Length: 273
Image (cartoon, rainbow, N blue to C red):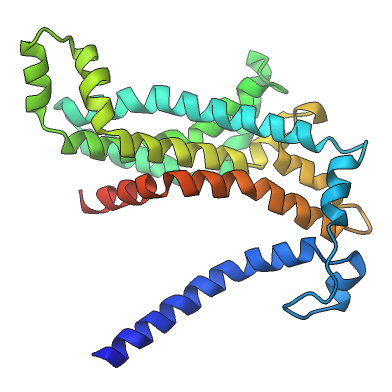
């Protein structure tokens, strides 16, 4: 029994290291001199320099801080929009006895599977008619199409776990339906809300295709498009590209650190309900 436990632990450690190795390689590539990235294939770098980090913030033709600002605007907007639409939708689905709700949830799940490249062209045509091309609003709405189905499914699970008796007691005390929702139900579903918020922010932060399709003005580019500046026709500045990749990963790491327990509980709740 003890031997089996050690084998499972070793297999788990191997899987974790396999997934973390590309991140480690990205970090060490960002602190290697450009000549050593292909000339030195060792796991531990022989020479360390932070010149790439300095360069990405000091170059005049590449506006890194502007790219980060745009990414925060788009990601935060997509997160707020997702929560505003998905939260009441998930609550209504959980509380109302609606015919065909199973088919509707299946449809929501299917929409989550649609790839971005299949939706980009129809959205582009719609935005051209509505005047939403080259705007933050257009990209935010496009990103919401990716996160709303997931948010509905996650938060519905939490609303189903909250007993109806709490709302009935609130109604007896004179609380309205919306008052009970905001004062009682929503605080109890906080892990699900945090999970949906974190994932919607992260999906928008790492999205590339919608921004590429709809944003022509590079002053509105997010950091995912800004990375293209380091990829040339005949050469790629890998050290600076890896440095920007490391820096752009920091918000994701910070969000996961602060919302880890909510995300784990949200996924666990969804897996057993």
